[in-house]
Image (tube, rainbow, N blue to C red):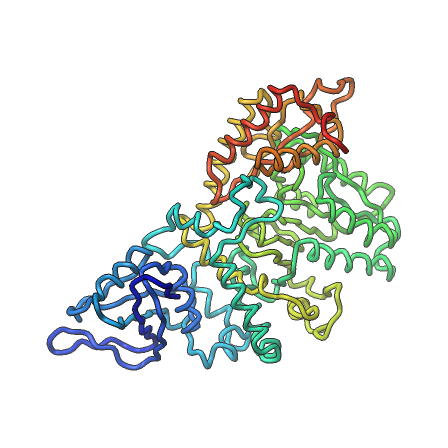
Length: 562
């Protein structure tokens, strides 16, 4: 960890022992284990904690780091941030070493020899052992600074203002390093990793997710590569029911008109081909209230039940992608129960880290969410939550774990990089460096994106795509009609033009003009604006000014080559 040209010191990191008070009041440390780590005055505290946590196999959230001042063996000093760590190096003067004490909760911090065989195994009751840990709140005395945030995302292209977190998310440097360590563990000794580390590591991720979404049991949580895979798992089960005659041909599957494109195609591939009748729930955009969506949903359910048909599955988005609107998912699930819909799948790809996801409150049979979009994991990782009565599902890729239960099946679907699925705890550690943890991040993102959306709409003389209470960390803002966005291809070309010529990245949604309105008379393009912790107000001013410049120059999409 040390770099050339800086003051270096060897940190003798110790854990697992006990402090004893001597007769003269000084402290001595007895027992435990020790590891040496080279550091200098430029090492980041977060990086230091990651190394130490891996050394002693303990959770960063439940770990504190302390040291004794040279010449003063009576007072323990706690290291909480970069300044504290740098101060420790400075205080050591000409000393070559410094004793550092890692204090972790006994129930969480385990010996290295126990880690792989017992730490995460169901037999040792990992879920029960970790129930006392608060996964939603930070455990810090000093929160992450703006400088540290920018350092975590220094790998972003500085030439482009990224306002499209919703598409691919973001991953901080500390989590990237954690993923790299998992990759190296596999590459170092693949057999040991496969037989002794992979499933245990996945169980830790599943346990974190269980607490995040308030699931009843860790066995209800399956970690997969993305939400589209999770949806495919459920749709495959539905397709089998049609093929095997459990469902009658013509029974209905319901989805929103604005369901994610890949999901709509999956429904066609799995349901339509096996005899299911697909019904889309339309609603107008811009949307003015939840009541509009609820009303259209009830109408669509009525169509689904017409002529004695049964609605076998309703697929409901928690946050639609394009256009982005927060759906009243609890209300719609309740309606499904009242109307006898057999199963409900909530597609919350934009859920965890963006809106509250409490699976017990939502009450659906299945729920999926990506964790690389708004939860800072590297791409790509998601989970599928299944209520216990629906655990007889299978991964679409059949491999050696087939028949051992969906969570285990999904834990090995061939040789590939599983590190994104294994770093969920590391992502939580990063999140909990922020004031308010995940709840604080969500609130600040929402408040900021609403303020920004209003600023852009006012600057362009347009409107928002929905009320502020129907957006989360993304908001739809109308683009000036004069840009001449006449088709979906125009929206894509304009997005590319703005990136290449103005250094701004924002997806654009094309909306068909209202009946009777000609080209250029109505708003047909809406920018989907995202806000995440790395964004600055200057990013949005840059986008505002770029669009305004195009309008001022008399630019239209017709100017762009196909």
